[in-house]
Image (cartoon, rainbow, N blue to C red; front, side, top):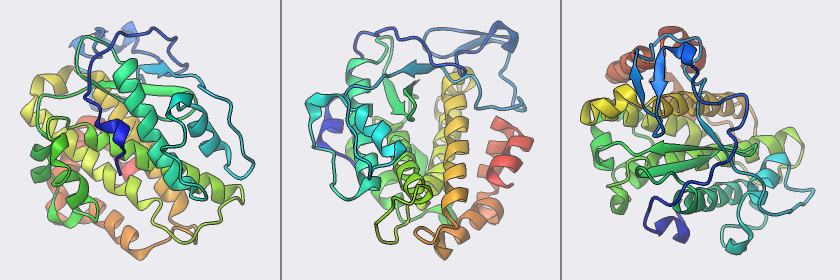
Length: 303
């Protein structure tokens, strides 16, 4: 899903310094690497078997922008609604559909951050993950179209044609894939949270299939970057760490939602099995293990 604001040309605007959110600040000197302002690394390699490859994301603090509240929303949708600047009004809101409102409002927040808060020393995308936290990630030097070949046929889900081979106007912005991924994760946060709080009133939907499917597309994006822009991939800790962090979040949401009657679906369970066992996904699994570690892949992804 995309909305009009996201169509604004991505530009690097002046960086406004906000205190990084604890506890996930930039890497320390103990990491054996020097982190420069664009999130890249020089010196020692990050290491593929770090205790948790999602640690050390450089978080940007994005506080609430308005005071909105409704007892039917739940904690997660309230968070998202409050972090969209008030000037955008209701253009991202879908009354009575919390998951879609969360997804589309996330696009609005991320577009605002990209256009008005991003560092000016490069072309960055922005991802708001709730709890006042956002991550800026530099775009790799590749095309979105390059990602398709890294996605095996068994894992080309229902969103593949829409977002991977489709949306060609975003071909020069490969982290468009992450923009959608994060919006699906935030929408799932809303849906799962509403079920847990006995607030969900919608019909059945594939709320947690989106995060799972985009885990594959995010892994494929990383694998493609390692080939098309190897210097970026080798040195940009922010990219690798945020990818790992959001993979873990997406899998947590999938595992929480897949057994809820509102979101359970045999098709998504089959897709998860394919991710873990399909022969044509061997290369993607091998890449993930080499990048984020075998223990982490087993714990988080189940392979």
